[in-house]
Length: 321
Image 1 (tube, rainbow, N blue to C red):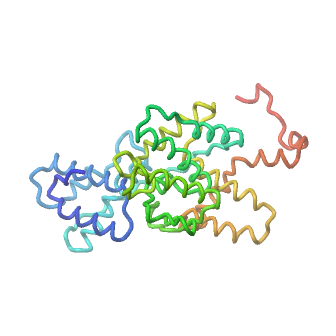
Image 2: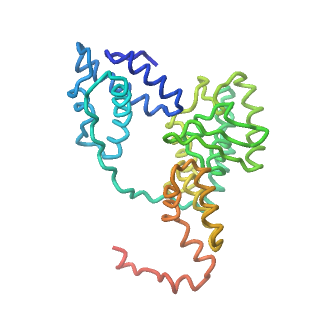
Image 3: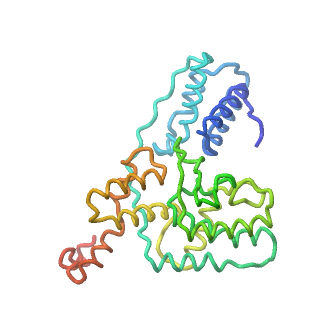
């Protein structure tokens, strides 16, 4: 990446080093901080100190911007201002965060047939033309998405796994690059550990000195676009429904929770274990998945059989609208 452009360059560089040392940095933070730096360089090329005008101009919510997008864009600037204020380098006021919108997203309820067809598509990626890039994709895609499915980790956590973060002897992932500051550990299922060991041998032949467990062609980590494109391309080939790669995390949570129904007091303890494994800082974040449980109707139908229609009667066509 290029150097910073504005007068803030030394302070931004120091701030990034500070955050990285604290383990609280991400690519999204860096991108937005670079945008802010570019904004200052273009609109205030002769400035020597950070002013309220610069902060307010950048942090003001845009007409086409949702509250959540604005929140994400300005959060790193707020952190940067706090960093400067703690060191006596500025007296500007922090901008107010916009209130986040209530979530309306309902995750896709994956069926066994959909998942089976999707992973079959992953396993049948073409081998031609025979070059390292094509071969790396062929062996990476099936393992990458199976890891999301079997562990419930976030897509960014999987993308940014370093070789040293994966203990192939004990079967434990050290999740350092996560949402917020929640470093945590994930224990792998034995079948997933076996797949990762075989993948490691195969990919090491192509990238013998790789830093990231899933290396991109330039020996870095994959971008978000790589995940969404590969999932979308393969999903659409075999399924008509809409789904996202992140939905595999929702599926992991709800599948675990659904298996504990009727566990009594053991339910809460298992929910706590699940919460920690998924990197949630508070238990309420995990309970959110339970409030959705998109497969609940499917479970009820399997348990109750024909009585399900008596509990939830079919809607007449004219009532649908």
